[in-house]
Length: 196
Image 1 (tube, rainbow, N blue to C red):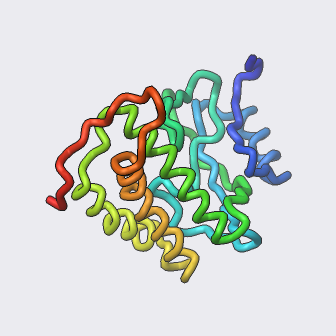
Image 2: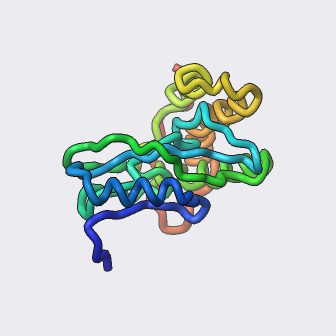
């Protein structure tokens, strides 16, 4: 049971540096806000990759520090919908240290796991979307990460992250449409297989 007024949300592969811990103590002692974003330094192995994250394949910051009751999560398996209430405070300066993947092979295995979980969510929703829409998202999501989120600044690493983010929706859709459902799961609402 939660006893404090503030919550720090940290995943198992994330670490809080002494600098961040000190900043958090200052913020919770003085902030009138309901929640604060904390930047994230993402590592693949020992490589720090700051730019290009997003579009369901990583994040560069999130509302990790919040007052009790200010944040709620949806029930999706991967990247659940988040609702925040109350005033937003300033983004903290010190980052969370996130050890995302050990290497490229692990990154690709994570893409496989994430798209399988997303496919389950799509099947359960009863509407997996259309082939054409998800096909178009390859381009839009790649551009979002590589150009909009400045993945180009990371060279080949930024390209790889943008590529994984671009493939996420279409792979999720294809798994939901083409792979067998889990036993007892309702059939998804399928649209005609066309490129529109």
